[in-house]
Length: 377
Ligand SMILES: Nc1ncnc2c1ncn2[C@@H]1O[C@H](COP(=O)(O)OP(=O)(O)OP(=O)(O)O)[C@@H](O)[C@H]1O
Ligand SMILES: [Mg+2]
Image (cartoon, rainbow, N blue to C red; front, side, top):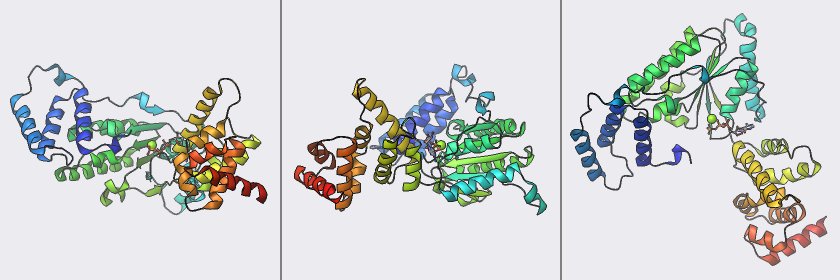
């Protein structure tokens, strides 16, 4: 489960654990004081929690010789953050998005046409969109196409509870970026904003973003900053405005889902798979690229294990894992239900009873669907 699904109290516990494990005792106090000031909405006994925290904070002054005090606060950026370009395959994107990405690459590989009009290539680009739709792999792809090293910075892990230290950590990353032409990828960019819910800190966030963006000017020519976020609404306008472009990533359409499914090795290029993937693309409306890929990989694993060395029923496993999607797909549509039933019978070799259970309809309904499908053919 991602941090994003957690409640405020759970999030606070995670924050404290993260900061405590980094050895930042003062940071732990600061987080404690923050919870006292603003008790999480989902605390069941807010007053008691507040009082207990206050007691703890009062009772335990920082020991001067605490071994934690001298521990490094957070991992420092080093060469392990830098990835050399390495022929990353093109992500599956909509025509519109693919075009935007092609332009982004083109303006950096050949800035001449822009320069003729006194224009510069864009230097800071914001990728937004739901999880698992290719923001990270596209950043990787862009760097790889530009043959530039990629420095990936996960802001959630860079942020220290102490704003000053976060600034220092950032500065180190920016120095690393300024030392070579590269693409710097700030992942989970909203972590900057999310971690600073206190209004007094909001100004600080803006200041930090300004620091990041101002530093772009001292980067070597060709450098590019890409930031990614699932929660563009957490970034205020003053922040998003600072980017040259915002690129909106979206859930795959049916065509893109089909493309993705068709390319799924090792099923790719078999005639059976070409026919099967069409219907699978239809029933997976609303799934992300990552959902789809994980689903295929999981189904393949299961099919091989369940097959015990014998025949493997990949369509069966796939359909099994898409039960909810299949039920949503057939709701209110007899042709959809008939098509799915016929698919399950033909490709997964399921019995009528199995299909009926899977779709949550009666056994005779499926039998008549299949009869109809047969007579239509
Ligand atoms: N557009 C795409 N084309 C091909 N594969 C994709 C695409 N999007 C996602 N994937 C697959 O899903 C995985 C996760 O994608 P990625 O990390 O790029 O998503 P993201 O948008 O950055 O998600 P998050 O917001 O959770 O960081 C990739 O490693 C890849 O296998
Ligand atoms: Mg990502």
